[in-house]
Length: 387
Image (cartoon, rainbow, N blue to C red; front, side, top):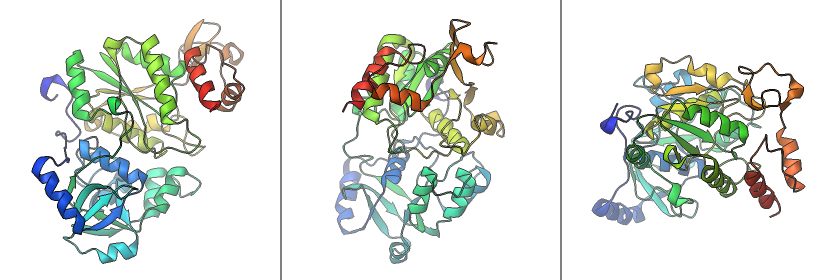
């Protein structure tokens, strides 16, 4: 455990790469004479997470040794568990034009300065290896793999100093850094906290498993991903309204906290589930909910593959406890939420709706059954679909 009784960050120390005061001014001035590299959305999200320590112990974009160790062994070169590559890539012509030791300015899509990277290493980006190992497929129809294939052929690594983690950040009141969530947990008196990762509105099954987890832990961190997602995912601003209403009406404020996670979704299934857990340890969480098809997409991963992958690690190495939940539903026979573990009801006695069926109902202005979603949430989604 670290100071104030909270769990230690992954690797033991919370990283902070944000330059302040005179150093920030120096970097801003010097960047005017540097080669500029415009980061795509995923790299912008990763940069922000690196800057505030969410990806501790990483202090920069991965080196060649770390990249290959992570792909092949799900560990950094020093042996510490890590499951997904985190890279800064450029096209070959740009890479060839950058000398080792040179400083480059990393910018957002509007060419605004984010950080300065001193290039100590350049290496070829083995995209096929990353796709095969990290995503389990080389199919470019996979949205995460498609992003990898669109990245540059040369990766850069070296000391990183961040001037501005993110320009115009959304949901500023909820955009808590790991240091801030840790301080909030301490203020609330939580010794144990469970994180719930989500990129969807919370329906009754999610509500059920988070509350089951709350019976185990002192507090619950609802930690929705608000970075880059697929085009057909529900927009973050709509989801945030749903989270606010749900917590205000159905959770105890003393034992629940809503904060955003400004990450890009990779849709890497089991490997991404490990990343999601390790990152939440940096935010101060001792437990992490791993549900059905965690971080999955399409039919690329088995229903409970993410839960099985946690079993391949020594719990002491991961350092955060996974709470594994099966698919849950409203059970008419029991008159309550349940899962296969807790009821012997038949399929006909269970309330289950496909995503397609729910979308059709909402598009028509119809609320799904209250056993599936809270009416307040349904109304927000109906309004959003009306434009």
